[in-house]
Amino acid sequence: MELRILARYPFLKEASERVKTEAIGLEELLTDRAFERARTVGFDRALAALEQGAIPDRPVGGDADALGELLSYPVARMIVSAANDTFLTRRYAIAEAKLAHSRLLREDDAEFLRHVATELGVALTPANGGFSLHFTDFLKFTNTMREKEWKLINQRVGAGVVYLPRDKSVRVLQNAVQRKIDEELPLEVNDLVEERLAAEVQQVKQVLRERHAKWRAQDIGPVRITRFPPCMYNLLAAIQNHENVAHMGRFAIVTFLHHAGLSSEEIFRVFGDVPDFAVDVTKYQIGHITGETSSTEYSTPECATMKSYGLCPGPDALCLTIRHPLSYYRKKVRAENARAATGAPRAEGPASPRP
Ligand code: SF4
Image (tube, rainbow, N blue to C red):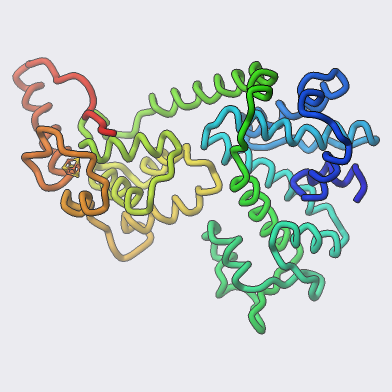
């Protein structure tokens, strides 16, 4: 495959093989003036993904330009890996996938699209001007898309395969690229990478720190975090730190925030720093749990249930007087109101999180 094409799709196996055949050493890539463009573009790639959620689609010129563009991809991955932040990794994967999507949409050659799909583990077959794929692949690569147009029931299905027009097939490939990059990162980075890319990584980390600080300072409607029981405080902190919170944990915090008085929109904003590939899922879950889009308004699990799921980090003194996380919250509200009425000083500090 031509270098110019590989530069446009650097996640392909052939692209990394091409990098190997160029026999460029890591030290050379990270220090040699000849690869300055690759380092600059690689840094821009990581930073643009973080700051804008999108990587600019630079036109690729001659071979030297194409090589710089191709090499910028491993540089960006090294920076993202060295920064070692889950939010950044996901946001980067999404941005690379969006870039691939816009480029693939401009490809006319069905055989080329099939080839890219095969490398991504999607068995696309050209059919009727569009493509077909096995329904299990369709489900696997569209499971984060909740819009009606992506439901299996709304697809043209026959003999176990789903028929998609070309643009929707390319959208499936976007998800496949995102999944691939998300699964590959972070890479192990050695001392050389840490040393040579230290300035770039520091800059990325600074942007991350600023973003994280802004999220933490954000008001969450009428709900005050100092009134949270340790279990909910920990769940919220885990979400804000982009840790993987299991389904039951997400369910518990959504029901808790809902019954504490937050609207679905306010709850969504709490989850707003979950990288945007989960936006659809998050919106769907919140609507479903709060009864906005379902017939059931779910209750917050009681302490016994939280404990059985390993979500109780261990009770504090107030926990010993209640059996439900919402009782904890309401007791705190009453105590604060009583103190305010008597003019007594307010107890300082948040509900203490537990490891
Ligand atoms: S005892 Fe109940 S309210 Fe307290 S941390 Fe455990 S689950 Fe939460």
